[in-house]
Length: 267
Image 1 (cartoon, rainbow, N blue to C red):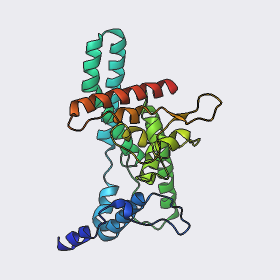
Image 2 (tube, rainbow, N blue to C red):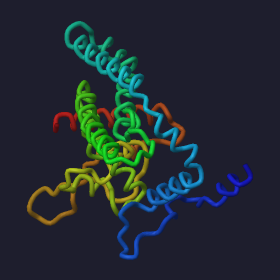
Image 3 (cartoon, rainbow, N blue to C red):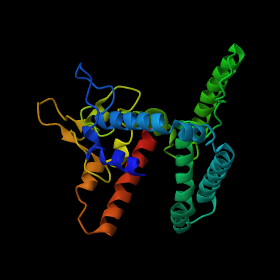
Image 4 (cartoon, helix red, strand yellow):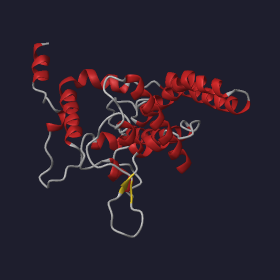
């Protein structure tokens, strides 16, 4: 316990002041991401005999897949009833509960799928045989293909599916965490890459002030004027008031829903 306490006391106060950038001046990951990566490496070196078995046996495929089927089937049924039988008040109440709960279950289970903790992992027993290596390689390939299928079909019941975010924006979020040079609202909207620089920026901007410039930006007319910034999230957040939680929650719900609606049309 004393040794663990000493280790904790050595942690930097600000995680973004962790591992410096490379000698070329260009970091492949943000400083915060590098710090977390280094911290995980140190923990594995010290406690690998305890952590590795847990990582190998932590798959929750039976429970996770069952809940994913339940949540998606329930969302699909509620979507059908919303168009056929329910009045607006019933739709609103069902969206609050249990609709929001099922939607969150879907996101969390697919998130675990993306990070490889949903499906079973290959055996870690060291068997010195080529056949064993080939079996493990085949298992990994099949698992990745199954993960891709689960991400796509498992996110189908929602109007703006979670697939776009998880497939193209979440892993990059871990890489670019806390670095305004590699990701900002303006850069995210101006980018021509298929992968988001940081997919979480689109969500976080509705509830916190982010570093970097806002976006998207538009220029109307041929004259060289300042760009027009049309950021739904930043405009909404600028109207938050300290000590007014109900007001802030209402603004967040309005701006977030409106942006999801526009992204759904875009899709």
